[in-house]
Length: 424
Image (cartoon, rainbow, N blue to C red; front, side):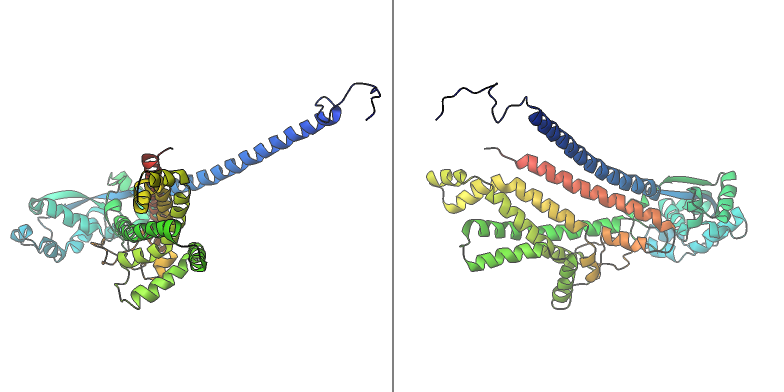
């Protein structure tokens, strides 16, 4: 090796003060700034889309929770009501009032109060409010009363600034008389489907969703978790286990409508279960959700450190005790999070439920899992396909209810994850 002196200052390969290195550093920092800006732009764009969706839904949906009502004066003394007051205390009061001609009484009162054609200002179900008033106070049959009844769809739209000129003029006349008002519609949260948008309610579909999700959870969660435990802790490593794992991964990616066809072929055509029932919908969605739970459960179990198992075995625990006393509690937050995510996906599904007939017109909320039912996504689909413009805001209101349901489920997942999370 030569010991000849080196002319000039000694330079190393990482000399940060050279012009070339300074240019590289500036380019590196500029590239990092561009990447940060791109990431921020992507997040901002996603936030804008989400904000646009929420604002649009809220702007249209909030009005779906309100109802335009008309103060209708009814003179029950002179009205031709076919009711024996003694029968109003019996168990068949609804049947008695249904045959009392209240629809004609309501139409006659509207014509008398608002002129010829006044009945067209009222909803088709206005007489139901008259019926409810009689049920609440039978003594009303001995006097006159003013009853707030729902307005027709055209008047309701005019009150919300979306009516045609004729409806706007009729609404103005009612407003001049002080006979029209807009208030929160509690019946939307307690009723079921109807042909008139002023009478529809979301409780029937919401209850159907709750029952369907209950059946799905009861079936998919225990089977999925036990399958994950067996595959991860006990199953031998051979070609059959590999085949099962590949099949589960493939099932998680199968389009949901395929599960609808499977439910139609197996549960309806083979086992002849009741059509359009929550139990069939729950069984179908359980098939779709189970692979997601198995995959999430296996990943959560796999993430538990082997030292936990070794320590438990070292102090004399059996393999079953290791799994259920040590591994499963530590994996539970991940399992529950995956389960709630799978359930949230099932809650928003429409295609498989349409295949098994859960698109029927359900006028009364289901009483059990075997009664005819529908669910929120299907109800939204049905209302969006209606001709009447009054269903537009009801569809948006139903979407708000569905979003709140999904947010509640995601909030439950976060709570359960934090509640059962253990650090080691």
